[in-house]
Amino acid sequence: MSALADFEPYYAVIFTSVLHAETPGYSEMATLIEELAKKQKGYLGFESARSDTGISVSYWKTEEDIRQWKQQSDHLIAQQTGIQNWYQYYKVRVCKVEREYEFTDHTAQL
Amino acid sequence: MSALADFEPYYAVIFTSVLHAETPGYSEMATLIEELAKKQKGYLGFESARSDTGISVSYWKTEEDIRQWKQQSDHLIAQQTGIQNWYQYYKVRVCKVEREYEFTDHTAQL
Image 1 (cartoon, rainbow over the protein chains, first blue to last red):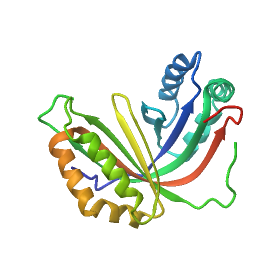
Image 2 (image 1 turned 120 degrees about the vertical axis):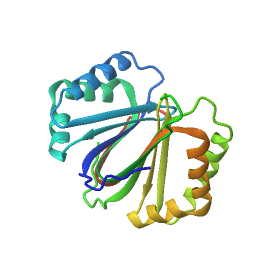
Image 3 (image 1 turned 30 degrees about the vertical axis):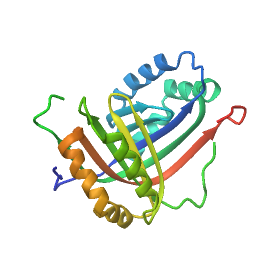
Image 4 (image 1 turned 90 degrees about the horizontal axis):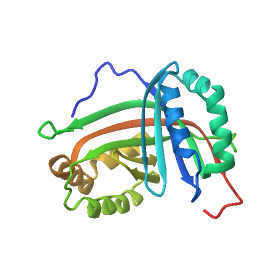
């Protein structure tokens, strides 16, 4: 368990979604968009998991970086396609990460 | 797509984890802890998904509610058991939700 004394706040976008039963082209687009995000200014990281609900969290240096990413042209196309074809529901939350801590079991292979 | 004009900021705890291959008692405890959280002061909601990585996000009215929840006695036992038995890795991020928007496809059955 550790906490960074000189912690610098950053931003998280929590994207929660429920997909339609059929989502042609979705996983290819998800991979493409993740690759694209990595090249974007201010990108810090990405985590994703899906059960009935999908949760993807992307991390960014500043709120401005998030705004730029939202307006990126290929990403705009993906958002539009998502609304038309893939999502029953989604919710986007833009958050400021104010503190964090983590645990690693060093006896285990990650 | 909608945005609340009178949006009131609230808090999110993003809990990202990688489990060990064997996690005896984990799912029972997860259910129990979720039930417990719902009764806690300031609780707003909970979302969870697991692929290789698990992401759980709980939502709270204030940071103080999060601190209280972290110190709740049964939850402390769960945290300790998790460190000993279930988690290879976890990271906790406490975030302030600053804005949000959502989309619902009203032609689909949720």
